[in-house]
Length: 160
Image 1 (cartoon, helix red, strand yellow):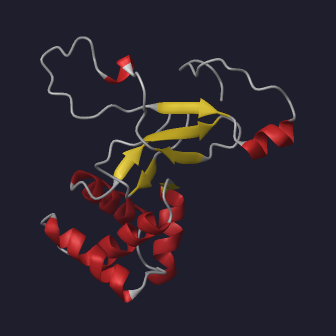
Image 2 (cartoon, one colour):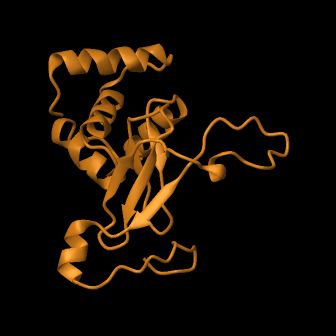
C-alpha cells in the first residue's frame, strides 16, 4: 500500500466516520481502490496481498461490499465488463468506456440540455442520481485498429 502517513490518516478517519471499525484489511482495500480508480477485484487483491499476504480473496470481497455499503467506495459495472471500484463518490460523475480495451475514464456531469438526466416518469421514486455511460474507442485502440469507429450506441446484446 503506497500511501503517505497523511493519506493513511485521512483514509482511517473516513472509515471511522462511517461507523465501520478500522481493520488492516479494510484500510488496505480502501487504500488500493483510492490509489487506482476503476480497479477490478483481482488488482485490489494483489495490492492488498503486497502488504497482507495472508488475506483471503473472500475477505477482499467482503471488505469491498462493506466499503460500498458504507458509501466510501462506488461499484460500477459497465455492461459486458467485470465490476470495478472507485473512491470518487457523491458527485454524480459519469464514465467513458472504450469498446476496444475496456479502459474507463471519469467524465464530469453532463452539461447543456440533458432531458435524459431528468426522468419524465418517476413512479413515485425520489431520484437522487443519474448514471450515464458513454461508449467509444480510446485513441490508442483507434490508432491500433486504424479503422473507422462506428457511432452506433452500445446495446445490451451487442458484442464489445
